[in-house]
Image 1 (spheres, rainbow, N blue to C red):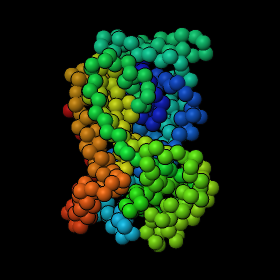
Image 2 (image 1 turned 180 degrees about the vertical axis):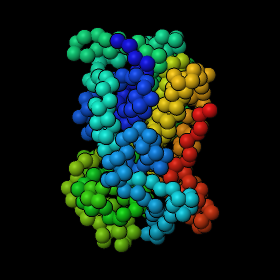
Image 3 (image 1 turned 90 degrees about the horizontal axis):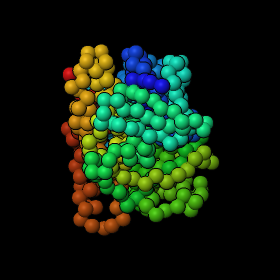
Length: 393
């Protein structure tokens, strides 16, 4: 079979890219090694930058997000029990973020994919990209015991950190940059009303905590734990008690507890590969970069990758601008490194590194410095709501 763009991976980035290309009349096929049900069962971030919202509008899939998502104009940072409000809208000239779960985004994109009539192959086995450096790349895979081949113009690798696309690039081509943090986030999802409308980032002597949400009736909470901690050591009761201990007193008193729907520990790392392309294979999202969730940038950086590749490919097919293809990595990495730096910065300032050292004192000083004036809070706010996408010209 033939298509213009073969997309490997059907998470939000692969589905969003496919939807945007389809609306421009650019044919594409999506492959994934797992089922739609598995993808929809993954619990992920839900703080969406304004640029991502606008991209969803352009893709024609923002109706439910605009109806059900919560627009947030502020975020709270609690330091040793004292609140510091970051007024995002005032500090950024009117920008905000939207809380809307990644699962819901994926639902909306899957529905749009079905309506588009474009092909998708789930539970595809042994997916392999070939001849990425040639002008005739192709992808092979197996489905229901049969071998298939897709001839295409370009391949989009949206298959995550453990996917085949990055691993298919020959050794020595990519440079990897990585930092693994000495802690993880123990997260709990519950059908309980959120403790606060605005998100609360908490720094305490016992470690970091985050009060987040998925809706007015579903909450997502996190606490920092050592990297070698085991989720089975944490009963629901133990989690709630530890969270209360870290929260400001008024929030602890308001906290509504309940049985967990999901509980897991996510290790924190910063990871980037350069370049983000190899010939006609382009890497997007977690296939190319991972950030700690502290700055809510993981899904949003994937969306900016999609925006860049979508606009380049549209100009290639509509205007013959093949010269832009070689600039994909250069353009995407500028924004990626900004997001990596911001997430690293927030992680360093808000977490306890399990040591009493000069570095801990400097982290405390830096956080207090940035919270002390609107001028410096603006630096934080502008990055939290999302830097603008770069024009493709």
